[in-house]
Amino acid sequence: MTYEVDLIFGCHIAHGRRDKDGYVLIGQRRAHLLAWEAVHGPVPDGLVLDHWCSRRACCAVHHLEAVTQSVNLYRRAWRNRARLAHCPKGHPMNVNAVVVPGGGRVCRTCNREAAP
Image 1 (spheres, helix red, strand yellow):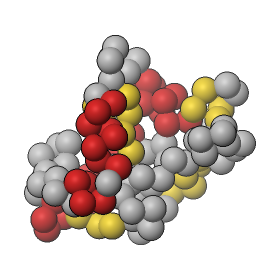
Image 2: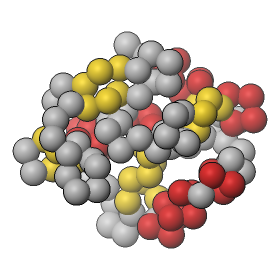
Image 3: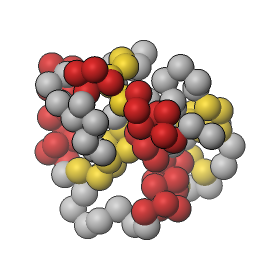
Image 4: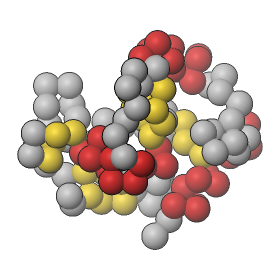
């Protein structure tokens, strides 16, 4: 999988064709799912991957979180995403958050820790 690292927001933007929903495909699979599975194994039953950055081309594992579909839908609204006090690793988002062009919020500490 080829991707470009966005040094400002920490996203790993995958290259390739996109499916009807805007996700990048590697073969017949979505790039972010392949990246998640390479690190964490399969997404647990009943959960979906939420992009904290809200960028569908992003395959940065530190921007993904396995959540229920109802949580994923709740977080789509900016007002709900802005209320999140901590990132998945527990860092406070009130001082660590950066807003990504797509409307997502990512943790600066997690981005620094994941930097190559």
